Length: 217
Image (cartoon, rainbow, N blue to C red; front, side, top):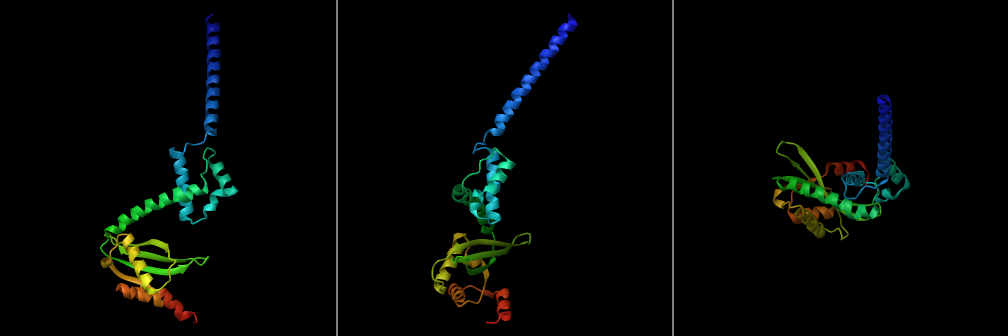
């Protein structure tokens, strides 16, 4: 009687264990097939990683639409649903930019003095841009270099407009002209005129001067 009862109990326990295992397997299967909620931590972690990849590696936004990239993401985590290209261009990347700009503004707000470098250049599609970089030494004597912006500059590249554009660039970052020690530029007549109008101290670009000395004009 006791042996038989023990056997029956063991069989019952085994059946319950199998049932529990089957239930867990079904639950896990459903979990693996359920897409992450867009408010979940995991969804945001993956989306942020992709956003940083697009911005830091300067790859085209169309990357998120390519079959190979989408297949790779699906293989790495099948529960993650990749957002559209529009989401990255209008939401994710602007949010990342705002986050880093806020931090950079805080970094440069307290520096007593800085130098700058500026240059005009054209993209492959011949669109004009004006870049501005600042350099400063922190309290622990570390030299820092920060490219503040590369702005679309469709206006005529005359000295007066470049002068105003550079002043606006400094103002937009809360940097006063009084803290500017010197600015490095090439020797273009228009940028020379702009620096003269702003009454800033100018240093010649060594790389540009070397290029002019080596390459026949």
